[in-house]
Length: 181
Image 1 (cartoon, rainbow, N blue to C red):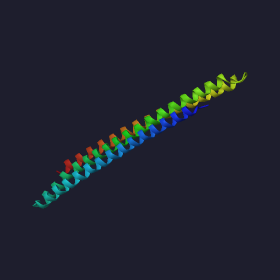
Image 2: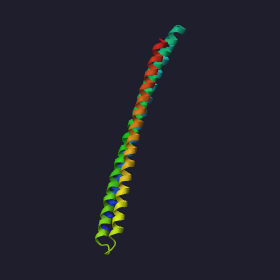
Image 3: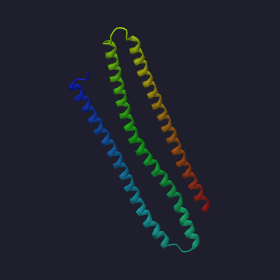
Image 4: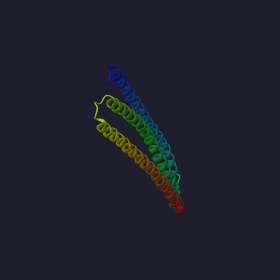
């Protein structure tokens, strides 16, 4: 049984965790807003420059060359934006995952201690039931660890795929831009 002091300590720890996660989520939103502001500023500046360049075009060939010169940087900037967005999301997600894993580890330790305490105070002849309970707890812990490993591997694969797609898109844009010149 938990004492009132243990309950208060647990609630305090849970509130601290919640506060920390809220702060991390807010940091992620701040980074996202800052990224979007930077992109918007750059887009406005580039739009003004592009408009000025369009006004100075003398013939159709010059217009085609100007448009081709704008395509490659746009694709690269889009890929860079996607990478930054992914980095912000994965960084924030990693903080949440870490906190979740820590809470699960705490809960597992508390539950194991509770099972051990129950085993010590169990009536004679209940050794088999206690052994089954301990085995079930161990199996649940192993299953959780397996799921954690699978999720981490899937995240790594998704990140590698995202980077490959971004690099591929940039390379295609460079090749297309080079052909138009």
